Amino acid sequence: MNRLTYIGIAIASVVVLAAIFASVFATHDYNAQNLMLRYAAPSGEHWFGTDALGRDIFSRVLFGARISLQVGITVVSVSAVVGTILGALAGFYGGFVDKFLSGYVFNVFLAFPGLLLAIALVAFLGAGLGKLILALCVIGWVGYARVMRGQVLKVREYDYVQAARALGASNMRILFTHILPNAIQPLIVQSSLGMAGAVLSEASLSFLGLGVPSVPSWGTMIDEARGFDLLINSPHVLFFPSLAIALTVLAFNFIGDGLREYLDPKQRAR
View (tube, one colour):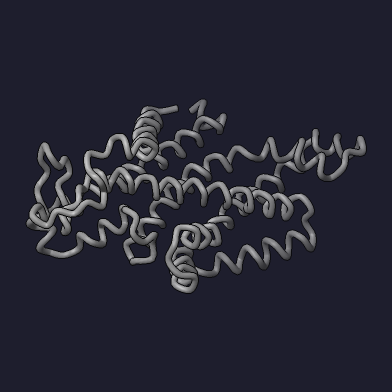
C-alpha cells in the first residue's frame, strides 16, 4: 500500500479513538453554555474556541465524531449486506431474477438523486438517528448490489465453479462457498469509500436541519456557523467542524484507494 493509505489509516484511527473516548478527551461538557464567552477565540481554556452559546467547540467536535462514525458504520454494514444478497442473487440466477432486480429495482432507485431521496425520506419520517440511518441505507445499498452483481456474473463462469456444478453441488453451496469468497474483494473497497460517503451525507442532512436533534453533529455545527460576519470575525466556529469532515472523508478515500491497489494484483505490481 502507498504512503497516502497509511496517512488515511492514521487519520481514521485518530477519529475512531476520538469517538470512543470522547468523554475522556473532552475538556468541557459539550452542552454547557457560557454566554459571557460567546465566540471566544481558541485559547488554553478552550482549544478550538466557543460557539454562539459559549459551548466548547473542541468537546463538540469530539462527540460529533461519534454520530458520524455510528451513522457511517451502520449504513455501510446494512447497505453492504442487503446489496450483497440482492446483487449475488441477480448475478447468479440471471434470467427473470436478474431482469427484475437489476432491470427494474436497481434502476428505480438509481433514477432518483441519492441525497434528494434521503432528504425526502427524512423529511417524511421525521428527525432522529434511526430514521436518518434508514434513509441513508435506502439510497446506499444499490451501489453494493451493482458491484456484487458484476462480480458474480464474472466469477460464476470460472472453471472451478463449473466443476462444482458438474459434481452436483447445490446452488447455495456454489454461491456461498465458491463464488462469494472470490467476488467480495471489490466490495471491501466499496465499503471503505462508502464510509466517506455516509459521513458526508450525514453532515449534509444535519446541515439542512434533518440530523439528530440535541446531539453535537459536524453538519449542525457548520449550519450554526453560517454568516458572513462569523466567517470574518470568528472563523474558528466554522473551520474546526469543516476540517473534521474533510479529514475524515479524505482518510477513508485514501484507505479505499489503497485497498483497491492492494487487492488488485495488476495495480499492486505496477
